[in-house]
Image (spheres, rainbow, N blue to C red):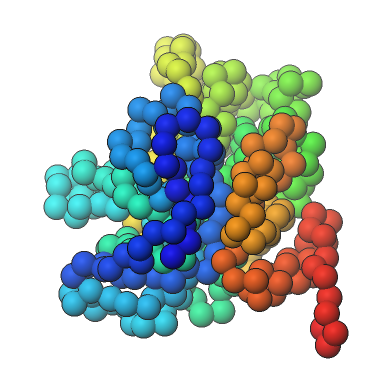
Length: 374
């Protein structure tokens, strides 16, 4: 099978031929239809300090965002059947440790991450333990199904507490921040403010339902958020960037008694005035890792099925799987040239997806070439 892999230390990925894996007793073999590129994949491509420290085996098939269908099952698998449309949570828990038994498998003491600790989904086939597998609705388009892992990050971050009637500020214009804007809008937020740096993604933010975008390098973030929120600050602050200045701005812009969700990963320790910014303000601080398995997935499925949440504006590019290097270049370009890049393994499916996307979000996607009879 074809697979995109990290072969050796240093910059770059390579398309390789790899054996089709076989499922163990509790695993499922999936034929992959669509994958999407995540920031984690960019770290592996660049082979930065994080990647060098985190990845312990090479070569490694990468990737953890996908959709596909079941083609083979281990003898102990009962919840799925051949042909089921599926995706997976990238967190693979043991279900045996003390944390899993406290009903927090997404924080498992022995957690494996797909594409990091075991071969990932950037391949024609992937093996996934059934305990991390999610069955998709049959009418869910595969390109939307493929981005449920990061969309789930946004759902968990946004809805760890209700946002109905709340003023929500989102710091960061990456895909998860943009998805969070859509989740907040779908869930009844009163006003949504988003900060970022890139003209393209700030424009996408408006399509996702943001009321006020702030250019973080050209405007006073904390002052504008306070002004937009009746002078007292945001009710809910979703920190999606990991930037030290953004974290400081966010804590300053949050009202007393507000909720601060930390999802973005700082590259180094961040100084915080614990007394003034947290204790005396009486804020509620949540650390967000992964998704609740599978509460978040049920919330996400409900939002998508009801038509309340449309993540399509964030999906800006659809490419053939073989053109992965172009996809990675788009994702790594600065200023940003893409929101989310999706790679499709079958040419006919790629054409179908491009048509569907063009009809729904014509501003960001070029129309696919038409052939006779279309």
